[in-house]
Length: 97
Image (cartoon, rainbow, N blue to C red; front, side, top):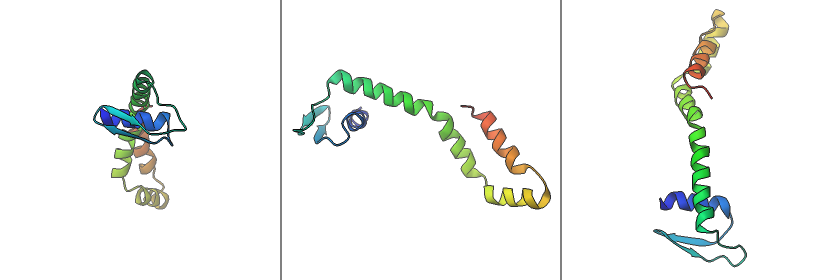
């Protein structure tokens, strides 16, 4: 939970000076105000939503990384085939936005 809180604080106050020890936040910034507990909690939820919303992209990337795309495109050009396009389309169908 503290790593999620730290990410939320960094998101809310990117240049602020602070220390998080366990669940205790020590605000050391004299220029910016400390975010409230409810602001931090809301930001944790928002950031989790953003992360969850990108699940399809992470799944696609993992599948794309398994392909030798340069070789597939080269072979398709030489052989007048659509192997690469077919593979990419299959990944997009399996992991829609």
